[in-house]
Length: 302
Image (cartoon, rainbow, N blue to C red; front, side):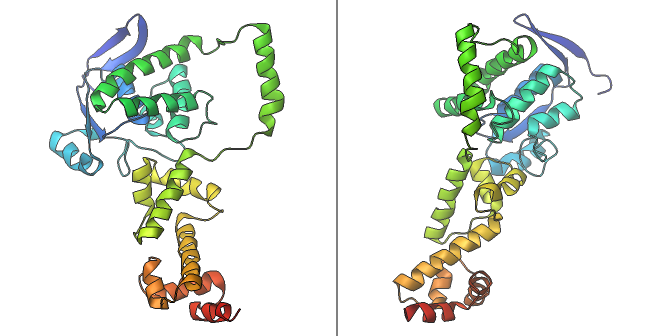
């Protein structure tokens, strides 16, 4: 920014870079865990060390941002957010031209932890575990941010000066690690991310209660970027899109009701979340190759 005063930060002997004294307000969703703590750390350490960080409920972020003239970040539809495989921390680096190998190392870890892709960096699972635990223990968002700042200070120091060091330096320990990585880890299959279990429970709840669940609602509940969720969904849900999987589950529930109840098809259509019987019949025939009435008649004769 033109005319901005810059000051070189030096915190506890560790040099973090140049921070522009623009004193802006930044606002995001409440209950931060990983990216919504990492981004404020980056802002305060490298962009604006006098920045004010504001956490509010999801549905109030945009309105409050306009009231306070604050910059919203890490939510759908704003500039500072996730893009493709990259999280909001990545966008801050790109937007503010922060060229630092240590920040790039941190970005891979934060990206992996925030999107539940721990294959991006081996440290991602540890970072995720730390902040999931801290967010459970500390309910005050700014208290959590204060502690998170120290965590990311330590991670930056590691990424800048100590990333080559190994905790296991003894030859025997190192040999065991090499055996593990060479022989044992090769046979391990990719584990489904934790969000897939939570999402399956959400879908089942939706089917049981006849509620409507959209991809946007699911992404907000899971605190996962909707674009990432849409892209990754099929990998863990029978190679189907979110919409196709929901329709498949509804048809399966309808078939179960046909076989265990005497409900008319109109009632079954309602109980499985279809807008009307016509919609139900159209989707049923598309998936099963016959009308629902034909299917019920055919299987009732067996």
